[in-house]
Image 1 (cartoon, helix red, strand yellow):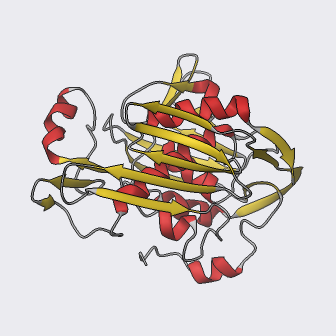
Image 2 (cartoon, helix red, strand yellow; image 1 turned 120 degrees about the horizontal axis):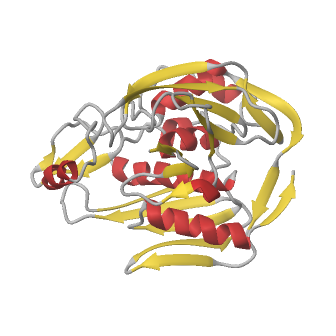
Length: 303
């Protein structure tokens, strides 16, 4: 198990995540870091929000401090990350932070940010999990909606796809396939109902998985204005001979990181649907297309 600095045993025994109502943070918490693609340093402050406000960003560096909702309507297509835009205000690489909020069951949160990109931290969602735990969970006197799927939904580009099937409980399954031998074909499956701090929960089984890239693509991506803040300290890099910066935290860490991205992207629906979602060789674009299709197909109720 990855050493996180969290007392996961204590948190697993607590009532964290067991509420059937909405939640927010009990206090504010701050983190700083560099954005993966922009290379700019920003400060993020997570704070409490009212019931029904959802998760939303506030660009405190811009005139009027415009808000950007973490919703599908705000998605702005981009490469190698998920970007949200409302008017002239945008926030990029939101997926790891949103995955941590979704994975720990935080429904409503105000996210103040001093620039255009969420810090990458160590390349995983672990730093955000630690921040959320530091802030604490506050239960709210408001019902939480639950989304159910009645008919299969599938999107694909070539042999890459994401599909959702009706199921009695939510389950996510992710597969990847790379020609590089050190990665190869990997699969990972996760149950959102698992206690978030238990052995198979989000905090221990998904959040620590770091972003990864291929060594032979780095120069081209940087020439295109991408991964300006990437380094061996915040991303796994794989070459033809193997990993440049081992050890891995999990044998299938790349597949687990893709799962992390999927959770963050589908969190733009508000919460994770009760369905079996299967992804293979997918991307942020495909994740978003499935979320858009699900938005039309889901049936909502309350717990």
